[in-house]
Length: 224
Ligand code: CA
Image (cartoon, rainbow, N blue to C red; front, side, top):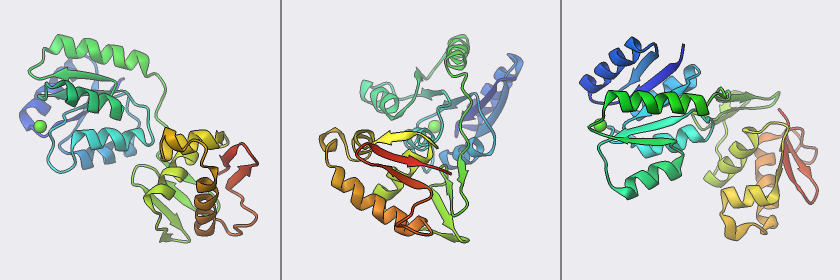
C-alpha cells in the first residue's frame, strides 16, 4: 500500500484528507507540525509527503530542506500561499509539486499518483553507522564513543553530503559547489582544511583515515 504522510496543523483538514486518502486505497498518517513530520519520516519509509507550509514552529519550507538532506521522497506542497515567490522557494528547496488551497480532491489525487510514479525509489536510511561513529541525517547528530560530536555547519554539510553516498567518489568540485557555492568550485584548500578538522573529530587515526578517504586530486569518499 502507498504510504502518505500528511503534514497539516489544521486538525479538520488533516482528518478529512486522511479519511479521503484511505477511501482511495492509501495508507495515510498525519503529523501536526514540522518537527513531528521529520520524526515520522525517519521512523518508517514513506512513498509521498503532502505538506502544508504554514505550520506552528518549524516552517514548511524548512521541513522540505531537512527532508532533502537525506531522502528523495516525493513532496507535494499543499498551501494557502499563492504567490510565485512562495512556490519558487518551496520548489527550490526540493518540493516536487505545489497545490494551492482551496484544492479539489480529484486534483490532489491525480498529483499524488503522478508523484508516486516518479518517486518509486525508496528513501535512504536516515542513520549511518560506522565502526567508529554514527551519523543521524534526520536529527543532524553525530555520535562517537557514546557522546555527541559538535560539528560546525560547514563540517556538517560536508559530512552529510559524503555520508549520503557511501562508497561513492564525490569530486572536490561537487563538494565545493554544494557546500560553499559555484563561485568556490576551485578552492580546494578549503576542503583540505575542513576534511582535516572532520578527521580529527571522527577518525581514530586522522593520519590514516578509515572512513573519510582522499582520492588525491579528485575528491573524497566515505567508507562506512
Ligand atoms: Ca497551516
